[in-house]
Length: 275
Ligand code: SF4
Image (tube, rainbow, N blue to C red; front, top):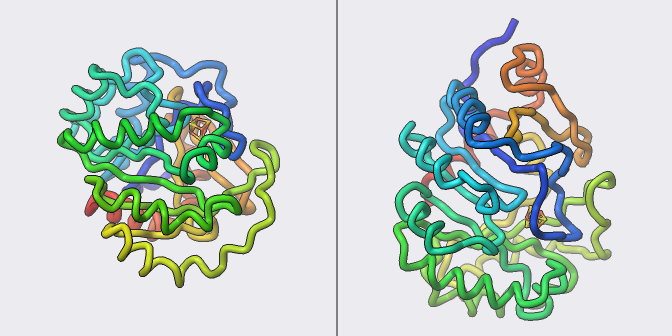
């Protein structure tokens, strides 16, 4: 029998497609399309029955989808905090107006300095684009977060990144371990990052920001994913996706809930809200 749980943080993902081709991306782009505003609102209504403190909206690039700003308004009017992960490609002035009004936290990627970032993201010029958008976002009523996937080619640049963002209006710098999903992305280059926790105080000092490192082991059971057409999915065995079914299906919900670590999920939600 399904028991209603509060789920503090729910990830709402546009996994029909993305305008970028990051080789490390771990989003499973398996839905035939991304739905539309009518279906998104129904999905959000179902999500809100779990009383989330924050909805994290991400991959593929959410601002690519027509009607996305209307969705932001809809969620905001329901009183739930909104965190959006964006690759910065569609941050137009129309998007800024919606961000200013409805989004609490927006996260942009910074995966190295210059060509190191561009090569990692398979996108020439993306580094400059991200820096430009960080500057523009800092003038809005939104908290800006930087996400960095730590890998072999940017580890030695972390201090440089810290200095780069020092004078930017950034609320938090989040470092991530590369997450390898054999069915979805490419294996990481061999790299031993076990020293990274010792480096955090220095990165925090140089950047004058709150800096956190998220290893895969801390993340795998904290996610409660829902796609833009209402498919729920999670992660099993550390790096394999499992689809539970529709968010409206109680037996699917039961399975999704069994596989979620609510304590860690809530901790991650609180960290986002308290930024
Ligand atoms: S921008 Fe994000 S969602 Fe899109 S391919 Fe890159 S990592 Fe994946």
